[in-house]
Length: 189
Picture (cartoon, rainbow, N blue to C red):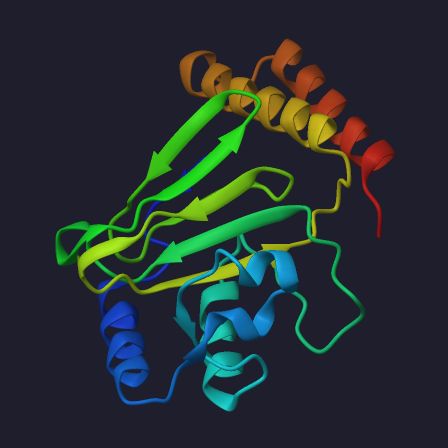
């Protein structure tokens, strides 16, 4: 799981919340199959509605998040939730993600995002008071395999830490080249 703070500015969150408050919402079960409809209990914008498309472009406009709108079918490698409500605006509503490392509950500040493998089981706990507003999207990674993405992430994180500690020496340049060669080998276009 990766927490990305400040994907949206406070001004963007306020604008989105105001526009969302003034629009019609539909039953969230309209966008899932029969199994999901048994457990999904939320309201959402209609898929393809002008406001959903417009606000989706704002959410996916961050450099760390690349959604393909109106293009070819999207392989859903990574899930992303961008929080639009502050944690103190509602009780409950934690995003629960279950993966090979255990169960994680997430409730982030408005404008922050959490990214996690789409292969993880996830659910949102019932909101017992207040209102939880969030944007959810899937992302197709250049690297299809979750294990390879995890290795690249760990390698890049360590390269960045070494660079901050020691600067760019020949060993670090070599590791960076290795990272890019692995990306070239595993990336799909």
